[in-house]
Length: 183
Image (tube, rainbow, N blue to C red):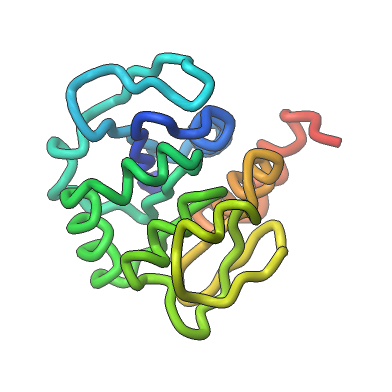
């Protein structure tokens, strides 16, 4: 059975982070569901318009292997302001599932107390003032206590491949990575 991933898209999300995650994971036969915070198309950070698979409300009772939050400063702020997403994330965490966040989105997890105290994380360096808690590292990807974080748009392929390997194994990662012709 394929692994399942939820990627919520909020107004202002960073296109590269959201779309690269979806694309790479689907290439590895992962079942990825994109979900908007409401019924409307989602206008991303660079003003591209996106239709999601579902709304967050329609997937609130589903169990996913991982939930990944794309960044973008405005997108992260809008994710953080969603009480429904917060409930979904805490339920997911209580089930022992992994949570991913890239760029400004780790700050959402910091502000919700999921990343706190001695928890190591990475994020886009200029976004650090958007949250409190945790121990910042400048690593491109950090995996700590079932929370996976990544630096930003330039690390989106690495992050997606890292998550793909965790979900579907090294063989699948190698196959998908080869077809991408990354440097």
